Image 1 (cartoon, rainbow, N blue to C red):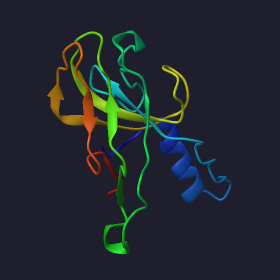
Image 2 (image 1 turned 90 degrees about the vertical axis):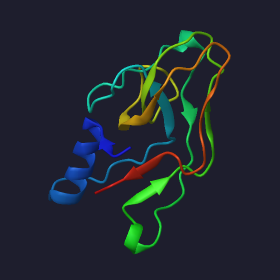
Image 3 (image 1 turned 180 degrees about the horizontal axis):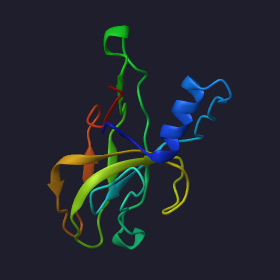
Length: 135
């Protein structure tokens, strides 16, 4: 996942490059959601809460040594489900709110393999499987 949502783009650019930019407020939490379609910088295409899936808390390890400091990944597994209806999952996104359709959209990306969980299935991101890389 290497894509930065519009609100986060503005916050990073203003903070790091402008003399009038203020330091962005750190999100109180980080929550992952899954996308039906391909997420973009402006829209997550979030799976509806009626499918039995909700945003999940994500914990990240600190960026590593200077040689690899442009990347960090989840430090605990992230589980979505069990699904109450089947759907096609194409992407994942990060937000600062647990509520569907609310909060500030932070990062997004496509799954390397599209998933189609069936009723009763869960989708699990293992430790280290969700990486944010700044290149």
